[in-house]
Structures are given as C-alpha cells and as structure tokens.
Amino acid sequence: MDETRSLDASELERYARHIVLGEIGGSGQQKLKAARVLVVGAGGLGSPVLSYLAAAGIGMLGIVDNDTVSLSNLQRQILHDTDHIGMAKTASAARALHRLNPHVRVIEHETRLTADNAIDILTAYDLVVDGSDNFATRYLLADTAERLEIPLVTAAVGRFDGSVTVLTPYGQDREGNPLPRFRDLFPEAPPPGLVPSCAEAGVVGALTGVIGTLQAMEVIKLLTGAGEPLIGRLLLYDGLAARFDTIRYRRKGG
Image 1 (cartoon, one colour):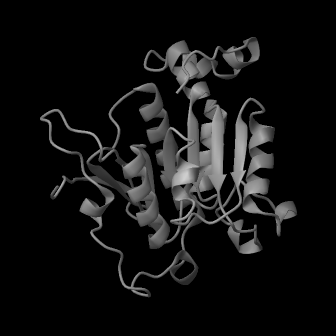
Image 2 (cartoon, rainbow, N blue to C red):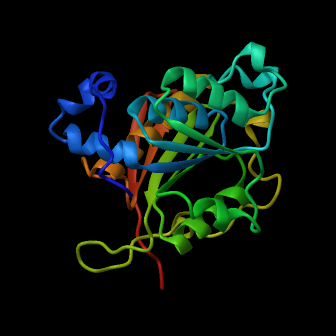
C-alpha cells in the first residue's frame, strides 16, 4: 500500500470530517486514498459498502459481479436505479460511484469469481469485502484471501437478520495463537436447498444497508488502524428486536 499519495485542496475539503478525527487524521486519509479494496458483489451488501468506501476516499475500488440490474433488485440495491435496469451491475455501480466521488478509481470485473480467476483478481488488492449471496463464493473467497494473506470482511443477511466478521487467519493474537478462519465459524457449506436464498425467503432492504455499512466501517478501521476490528468476533444483528449480540470464536486446529 502506497501511503505517500498526497491530498489536493478539494480532497482536504471533501474529507474534512475524517481529518479532524484524531483516530484518522491526514495520515489516515492518505492511507484510505492509497488503498485498493475489492468488493465481491454489487448487490444488497455491495451497494452500501461501495457507496461509503467511495465517499470515504478509497483510492481504488474493484467490483466483481457478473449479473445485470433487475427491477426486483431495486428494493435493496440502492447503488442502482430504474434507468439502469438491464445494465451490468459493475457498469451501473461504476457510474454511480464516479458521480459520488470522481477521485476514486473504479475497476470493473464483470465476471463470476471462480477457482480459475480468484487468485489473479485478488492479488491486485490490499483488502477484500464479501458481498456475495452464495456459499460457494464465500468459501472460495475466504480460502483465497487466507492464501494471499489479505484481510477479508465478510457478512451475510436473510429476512430480518444479519452478521459480519473480519478474517485475518494468517495472523496471530497477542498470545501468539493463530487467528480463526472462516471454516472455524462454518466448517462446511450446508447441503443445497437447506438454507433458502433471499429470493426464496425474502429480505428487508434496509437490513442490507445496516450490515453493509458495518462492513464499510470495518474496512475503514482496518486501513487506518482505528479501533478494534471484528477479528475473532461475529457481530449478529436482529432487526426485529433491534438488538446486537457478539459471539467470540477461535481457531479450532492447525
């Protein structure tokens, strides 16, 4: 990550509310500008993640998605609009992000993440955010990020509930113990059909905003060094009860 990129006068004004924060400041804002963040999925979670990261001044945002915008997306995928129905989500997202912050470079990966392309795509980035909607992609992303030693902010949503955590399994805790993997939380994917998709079970649009925004917050913390990331902690949100709970988890084996 290149931390030497300076901020011009318009950026100093744009990010003024960040810069006055002692936990971020000018140096932290420069780190955000120098960062390269990949977001897998430009849908319900990806929309708030990409929007807030672009607004925060992330220098380069990559987007992986092979879908097009449909009318049923717009209840929650607020990065897109009615005029973009039928357009590739990567292109629709890029247009919206450029309007929001022209300082951000957006890289479109109009493809599905697969075992054949995952390493090539992820290698170009400092940090990855999982906004996918299927277990195959989640496990592939977690395994690839671990192999490349890239932090991963992952989340899931369904109906009125969501969760988010941060994975850095290549690192160690203060006692020298290996940090947990995705598979320490979810050892294996459930059988097909056991967990209904959002299309089958439904999802409140605002829920994806809550969880996606939490993901963006974790990215900003990781890049600037502010606060304590959700490493080894799974944050759970119950939208109906308006309640947050945190579960701690550890590495289960070598």
